[in-house]
Length: 390
Ligand SMILES: Cc1ncc(COP(=O)(O)O)c(C=O)c1O
Image (cartoon, rainbow, N blue to C red):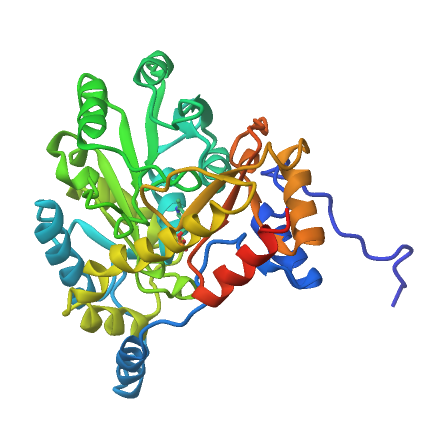
């Protein structure tokens, strides 16, 4: 046998996502862990879910519900989701053809993008926005067209959205309640979007993962509530956010049957299915609407506790309408750019935060940091104690 003359080498790979590195969330969480900082960076609860939900999942496992479920998800969960959305938002999605269970919202959004975007297509993103959208569009071969939300208020700017629409626009992505800005679209804004898109063939992804965290008596206006939007929309939701189980990665996509059919073509060769016992457990737990109906009050109390505490610091809290995020403006404390400020805050003050600039392509710097208040009261108090030293 002849010996190979050189060591085996790994073939060079042309990156599909050359601009992507480790996400800011991973970086800041690692830094928080290294430095012992209170981690208000990454958006996840530091408390556990309802033991009753764990019990339902355990029961499903014990009953032997451990093999492949149907590709679109187990029927009890699709039915429960359809019933909930019909009750809350007034649109009945057919669980057979219009509701698909996904591995969280992240997979739902990627799959929807892959299902409808191809080379040459343009996709409008409203910046700042969740970090997975743009790489998803790049993977599909589409072109991202960025339209800023109005700086300061972060409301949608319909004049600029209208100007960004072209004959190549295939898709628009919206997110309400919003990460990171904590704004909530009004019914008027949703209707304005519907009117703007009415003469077009543009599809919509409506990322509604924080749908049950809308405060001050306001209602979440789902794309499902506006018939002209629902007709062109993939409505994305996440059980992880609603039930304090972000690590379970289970969500749903609801869309009219023709859109769902295309979605499922991609889904079946992407993940094919999502874990069975979690789906059954969630379906059984959803029989009681109390947990999701009480979620807004649960988080509103934490929002108020945290915002009131921040009022005695030199950070300026912006108003949170929805989601579990709090933006703070820090120009009274530092003139560092956002990324440097958040590193400094983590290392020197002991509170991890996320720079809002990370949600913009060009890194637009507004001296804003995002803090997550989905934390135990003790965690929020510990963070506030440190922030008072600023
Ligand atoms: C706006 C937004 N969309 C989607 C997701 C992803 O949700 P999931 O954990 O269900 O994949 C997140 C998670 O932080 C988010 O903030």
